Image (cartoon, rainbow, N blue to C red; front, top):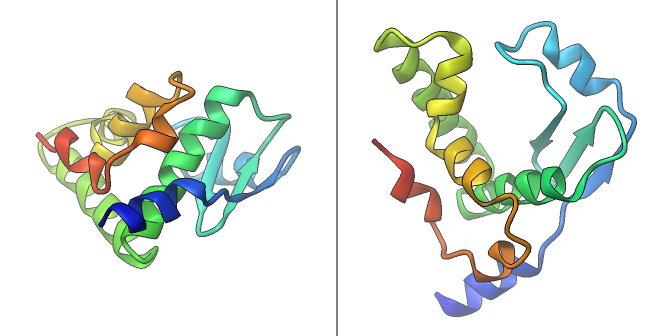
Length: 125
């Protein structure tokens, strides 16, 4: 498992700055999207600050752990679960354990290298 963790920690997504995709996604999302990770790509509407780069790289690593599709299925599940419990779309977004892990750790420059596999599970409530 340690070898897998190290392999994932070394992976970096392909970053596209000054992209219109976050602007377009904001039209249907419950939040104003600044950047998002989808598969091996990260799209940002401006030049990407380091904390945002770490935040989106955490999502990329979450997706790698779950072979991409399973992370998105669970991401949707947790968002819907938040909505069913009465949260707004925006609050359901922040309630999601994948977002909670990324927001809690995006300011830590050493987190990506030391991040345990499946770390998002600790944020399930």
